[in-house]
Image (cartoon, rainbow, N blue to C red; front, side, top):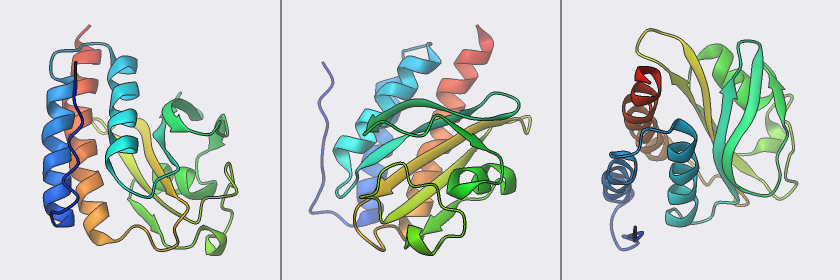
Length: 168
């Protein structure tokens, strides 16, 4: 059984370091990509405070399609360049959105979401895998420290989970 550790007394950087170690341990021995994505989503959702959605949108060669996640039911398909997720995928750049209502073309899957961070997932050969999307009901929930922490988590996830998936 896996036990989630929440280091709420630590700095944000230390919390992400701890979360990164937990994520690596959680997916280290599993080869199924979907299983790893599901557990990764759950780990982040239940570890970081003030989240109402965390999960994956996977690129099917044409658009982003919802993958494993935690939270309320989500939009199923998102075109590249549309909303925060589509923008992150098209630009291949992390999007930190302090107020989703101020983001042009924001797609409101959950009306409670007020801020969002989306990290593009790119394989070592440059192939777009999808995006990692995290929402919060708290305005200004995410900052540059969160971007660094989420990017480190996603780099580890892609290296461990996608690499094993492609080897099968």
